[in-house]
Length: 401
Ligand SMILES: NC(=O)c1ccc[n+]([C@@H]2O[C@H](COP(=O)([O-])OP(=O)(O)OC[C@H]3O[C@@H](n4cnc5c(N)ncnc54)[C@H](O)[C@@H]3O)[C@@H](O)[C@H]2O)c1
Image 1: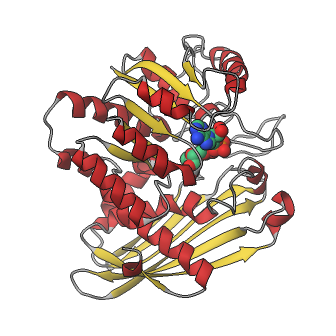
Image 2 (image 1 turned 45 degrees about the vertical axis):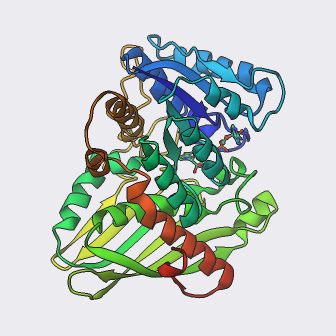
């Protein structure tokens, strides 16, 4: 059993979005629901949530009572909350970190540009840390977090949940056996209504490439570990639609073209990673797919469509993805324990417990989890992509090291 602190109380944690108009596929959230269930299983001890607005406590409690306990009658949604006062306190997480026993588990789910500072302070307080993707925005920050986690013998993990999807896992293992890398094309989107949820930071402190391309770039980097090296990135953008919605200059769609070199044959290969937050409403909340081409074969995964559709009198045709989070209750109980969103968080907590109670070597965790140390190339490619957009040129990966 391990005590857990979650910093951030937005959509991914609670399901609550700042905009009532914003459509979401996660009205019940992911992180808090998973942790309430894991507390029932005896894996989570004390649970604390920390936001920055003390006035939100009552609405979060009400939401959990009505929408979680309302349909999962076996779930207890009690939690400690920071800030303790009814005020706005950007630094309430410092108080929350202080009251956690050393080597607790801290989960950071705040906007991308705040991850580095909060993760650094979490490690300084001697806690294990799981950070929502993208971990940080620069290689310099990422390297510093790797150094700190290593020197303090703590676990630093990134919440890259696609690594726990059984089909992606199988595809990654097969792709590694297809000989030299040739090409990958990935696409991921969010509906444009979601931009209202992200209004406070979209186009200002992060972009859609950091937000969504991080997933498939991590999948490719994992496949290519020890096989190929990223050499350069050239980024292209489309603009104009999002600006009308949130009245700020921002990229609607970003493509990163990455040049790779195979380590055995020294041959060239490339990948294209596109992400967009101006998608229309459709049968899925988020399109997500990739195509991989190796020397001896190709793989196509359409993660958004698993051959499962639902049509009812009340809604249009839907393609649900219960493999990520299964919200549909059974006998009034939550039964989504096999979802890869749930598994990502559970794997972190189990690993924290193993870190605290066993002498398993660090390589054990590196082989199984998206750690700070094995995701550095993801940040390098995303950062090079950002520089390429800003400076409209090809950026060598060695420039960001
Ligand atoms: N929404 C998703 O589906 C999703 C999925 C995976 C990862 N993520 C990642 O999770 C992070 C948050 O995303 P979200 O969608 O929940 O965003 P959101 O905008 O809904 O929520 C962010 C929350 O962080 C809080 N916050 C900001 N600064 C804080 C601070 N100093 N202390 C405490 N809380 C603070 C905000 O008040 C807000 O409640 C991002 O890095 C995102 O990339 C989101």
